[in-house]
Figure (cartoon, helix red, strand yellow):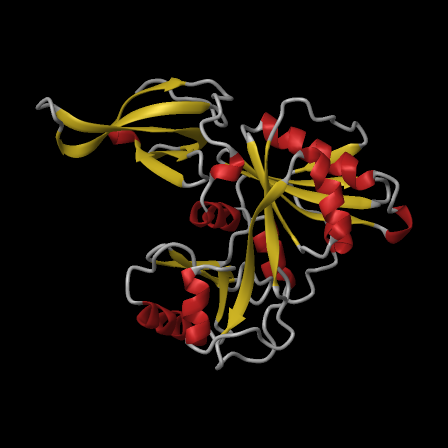
Length: 326
């Protein structure tokens, strides 16, 4: 093709998939999403759920731009736990990832539980006893403590418990996942700066990158569309926002102790959500502790509601020093 879409635009691209279609012509498929990159070989497109698809240039039949903000097809509260867990994992990507059916094996040098546990949602594609054994072997082969992130009340939770897994020493219990449908009218604070590059000041205030700095940097800045919000000079408050497909993730909202109760966190979250809406998000998620009443009070005015709880379980063979943050 002589022309190509611009990076960041939403398109539908029709491409050949091989074989014969129902009318006797070549079989084709449509891929809808935001263009992440284009080179001589492929269009790289991010779909609504954050999955990334490569469409070979030689297979492209045609493409056209579609509206930047299509009508919402599904409300945030209606998404199933398997899909939402996969979305949140894309927003906090591990350094190593391997699929076992629907389960995702994740490792990142011990930096946070989310990036160093198997996301045991959906089906592993085999008997649970075999799947759990495969999980344990995968982590032990990497000299990492076998750990599972399971939805509270799920079949996977029962299977791991029946296999002898349980809360580990010093292991954080888990978290509450909340979701919200996004509006178009969030207040953008002119004093909040959202950068796309991670800087030392932001990381210092985050204060949770003490396990492995290189792993922390890679996980925190890993997604294609991620923003690091900061307020004050020197920085007094920070937040992280990530956009994968139509979903935004809010995390790492931190305010210096002497500046709490001053509304800085609200200003950060509002600006982060506006930033995400500008980049195509119409739904958002966050992960926090049920007992963190201050965080829950912060997010409630933005429409966040409970979706599900998850917890971490550890193999009996796990090293006692496991990743301890959500």
